Image 1 (spheres, rainbow, N blue to C red):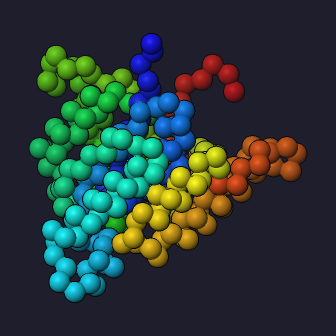
Image 2: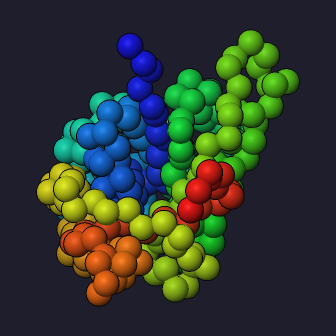
Image 3: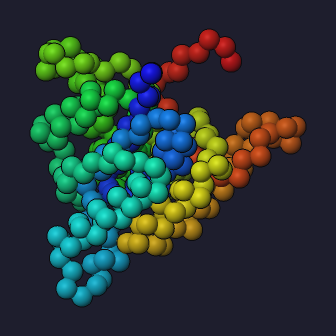
Length: 244
């Protein structure tokens, strides 16, 4: 029996993987991939305003609520391996210990591809610092001299998922993924994020717009595929192909 392919999604906060890559996650899980999601933080300080407005709220209660939301969302997407580093947020504490922890996960998972945030995000530096951190960890995971005896990483593509205001983030998608068949799973995961209900319809609209872009770029009026929902990604590294 062949070993399943794997993918690794690194999310700065507990909800990011849902908005930005939930369709890709559900689609690849359905295709037999084992997708691992790493949440570097719960987004407890900066992305939980609705929770903080409740009487008697504490940091511990917010973290617990956000963890439950993320676990429920992962379950809706078919993910069984979600990990929480609890590095704090606004700002993330991405020190040497966190680097070694993520390198260990990367080497353990041996992903066929990885996903994380845009490389520039002045509205939320946690996002762009995460991708700098992920690129560094990917590099270390490839180094034979780091923890000799561990299986080193090959060269998985790193896809950057769509930021909140893409036109401000120097993010240019070069891949559109049809997620129509798993849209119900993504929407269910979105609705698990009770602390950020104001984003539910926003990211539904994003998926619809990217569905339009998928149709246009797969043939347009001359025979494009009828994708209703899609996600966009920007690849960091060249892709090797045998034919176009």
